[in-house]
Length: 286
Image 1 (cartoon, rainbow, N blue to C red):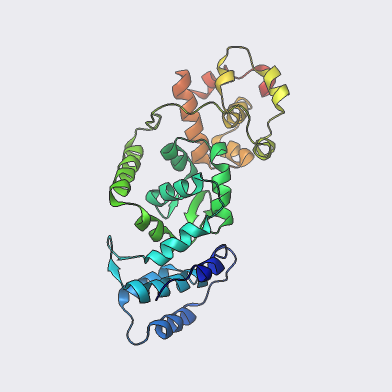
Image 2 (image 1 turned 60 degrees about the vertical axis):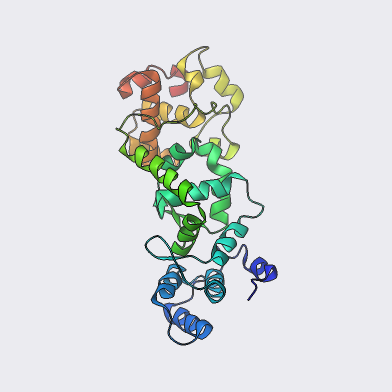
């Protein structure tokens, strides 16, 4: 059976909106679609769709056409499912698919700071791609972490990676996680300084307009090199806030706040919050 583009197009963009089917309905759907005894591996894949009608439709179509193929510790997701996930991002920023693949290697859920370290991008630079992945229903927020909304999508993204690429990314991930606290993630070159954070992010973290901010920075000082998020965090440190209080104010996790602080400590060659405060202009901390 040929998987028709028209049918795929009907499923695209519905992962976020489609309601979840109850387990009993999923069981009947799988049995009716495949007939007879259902391979246990197919049941595992169907459970991983977590009731999503578009994912189940693509999965059952794929099983009928492609059969069940062994994968890394489980049945490999059918090409139909991988195609659905990829097509769901049609029209999204070009970096969204890259970000999704890196997130998959980090796990079913991951911390924003880890994702930033793996991609060499800061939070503001990732915002358009994150918005696209969240809007598509591929990822969602699980507390302060990003998580795949459906396990089947997570597996499909992993299976879409060539084995050599998947292995290399896992090596990068493992080296990142073995890194001693307070050291920076290895990268080819530092990303360019963030001259202006997006307007919505600036409002969230309470930054002033670019013109006012420029007046408050001392010429040639360390403050000039801070990104928008780093300035907000350093300013709140100068006000005596704890990491948890800062996290609430800037709407990041305490882990991410700590990640930014460690980066500032390393770049400035300092080891305490008191030393950091000396690099914050008095007017900025007011």
